[in-house]
Structures are given as structure tokens and as C-alpha cells.
Image (cartoon, rainbow, N blue to C red; front, side, top):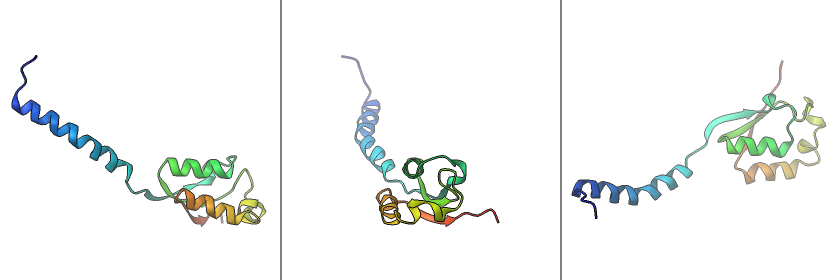
Length: 103
């Protein structure tokens, strides 16, 4: 058995007990209060947009276009499928920050 100082032992025990608290504390960090813009991903599907925004820690999405369609009134996600889209956003704790425009 190797000799270990009392100080080294105390550090190692403290680190072992503190580690789970540090890891769990990081998992609960707040999202950045910024939005993910769909302008940078013009060909992505609705669900991929949401998944990426969530994984990257964004709080909201700026809608500028979806799958190449810049006229958002032509997208089912925002017309006939609006209820499901709102459910998808809520499930990932995301919001729509704004509807972007180039004018």
C-alpha cells in the first residue's frame, strides 16, 4: 500500500463527493437568451431546426424561412399544423422570437 498524505487523501475524498454535484449542476444551466435563425439553415426540416436549436442551447427561434420557402404563410408548420408545431416547441422548451424579414 502506498503512503498518502492526509492532505492528498482529503482532496481526493472531497473531489469524489463534489463531482456528482458539479455534473448535475451543469445539466441545469439556463439557456442562452438568444435565438437560432433559420436563415442559416434554409433547407432543414422543421424538426431538425428545433432539435439543433435545443441541442445548441438556444432559447428561441427566429423564423426566416423553412426548407427554402421564405413565405411562411405557405408552410404547413405555421398554418394547418400550427397546433403540432407549438407542441413541438413546448416539448423542447423553445419559443418563436420573431418572424425575420429582409425589408
